[in-house]
Amino acid sequence: MEKSKDLSGLYCVKPFVQLDITLDNRAACCCEAWLPGAYNGCIEYMTLEEMWNSEKMQLVRQSVIDGTYRYCSKTKCPYLISEAFPLYTKAELQKAVDAEDGGIELESSLKLVKDLGPWIRRMLEGKTIMDIFPAVYNLAYDETCNLRCPSCRPGNIVYAQGKEYERRLAAHKKLFGDIEKGGFENVRGFYVTGAGDPFASSIYRSLLYNFDGSRYPFLKFFIMTNGIMLTPEAWEKMKKIHSNIDYIFITMDAATSETYKKTRVNGDFDRLLENIEFLGVKRKENELKRLILAFIVQKKNYREMTEAIAIAKKINADQLAFSSLDDWQSWSIEEYNENAVCRSEHKEYPQLMRVLKSPVFEDPVVSLGNITPHRAKALSM
Ligand code: SF4
Ligand code: SF4
Image (cartoon, rainbow, N blue to C red; front, side, top):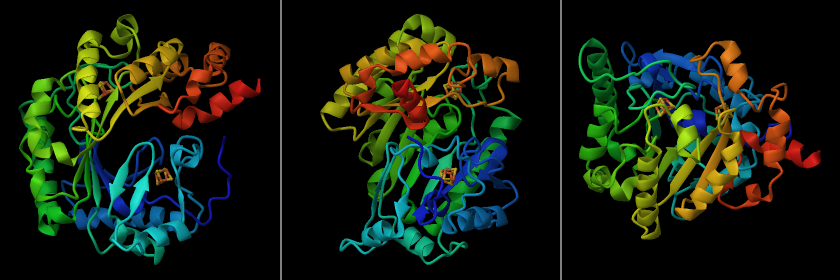
């Protein structure tokens, strides 16, 4: 069901707590697909403080405070579409900030971040300039990946040495140098990674294997990966951050080997299944807090959505998050339109409607995200 268009009095906390450092070392207030023109600076020539309080960042914060959300896409941002991604009222946030332990727990299908009190308090006071560093960082400046999904990139992208690698490494070092000045004890989380794969990138891999999380119990790692290189050995190498890992999020995009070969080029479906089964056991043993699988719905895989739900349940995942295909400009507009089966003009949209009628989508493991309006439509037919 679509949320009311009147968003006044409802708060998205993201621009007040999180900074994304993304492709070309640019800073962004939010995901570019959800907030067009989200870029607000560059780590190469700006300090963390300058990016965090740039003019664009302040305008986005103001649009949340005044409830217009004028920069956010009302059709793509799941926080503005799906009930599973909550926005909060002032009263809810105030209550959490005033909680006796001084902590706040925000829960959505994607994240659980504790102790955001200092950031939320400033938001409730109407501040658009933040005098504390971000609580959460989305590390997305190294696109290196072992796969080559057609929806994401036309060819292999691996930076392991040379000028482009050095540029990314320099950005990483500069960012972490700036963060360190504010103290890692004031950081609440790192998303690794919003671009590429954290185990294929030597920059992120080194962070995950070497960071001593035991010194920072409030700092969480939100790991987003294709899962192929997240083997039992890789899990073991991350032992210094095991208790900091809030979730592991693995995009599968298929429920059969044949489809996986098309949606996740260079991947190995059997290896993926082995790795997610291993992580499912870690989840059962409570060594891993949450295991989330993801499925980007497109023409090549929508017929396997229900099978993917069965896999998620079988391996003990906490959630299977569906979302529609975004245009990452990897394809021509014609190719994108051909693959984006969630467009109501798509010739296979009626078949997608039939798939979405299934009652298995009501299983608690399923998060429909921005597929929610499509299922509502399917059920109303
Ligand atoms: S409402 Fe959505 S697009 Fe806007 S800032 Fe929040 S998450 Fe980003
Ligand atoms: S696994 Fe992710 S980052 Fe790698 S090519 Fe596929 S979509 Fe892109």
